[in-house]
Image: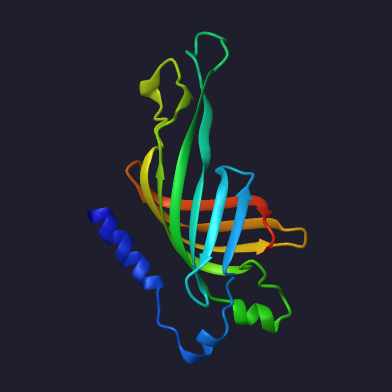
Length: 191
């Protein structure tokens, strides 16, 4: 219950009433579909909530990989470990620089701009995994709920090539600290 309350409080800070000028012109696209080719590999839908606010939902596959050194007395190869898991996320984005981009002659097509966001996500336990021979030496668990507050920018270039980068802070049951989001992909054109 407490995480849900925190998420609601954080999301309410991004919401604001519309003034007369904003209600005349919607800067954001009504609906944008994207596919990401980076981790997490997945599909994203961005839905307009207001003139400068969108709701972003993502479903995809992520994972982890690494190597653990063997005993120092032997020259054996390291033990490799990896895992593949599913994740879903939902967040609200507030775009703050659409007017400045338009004044500078830059595109805001498919919500290209800088934003502030709060994202709640859930990552399942790995359904494909190989653990190290000594699993107590390293924690490979990255599953569970998390919340991130990020500053970011996204751009859609000429041939619908998509770039997104977000940096900020995150909280989950495994960590509290730096969080990031990076995606390269394709934006599907309007119909």
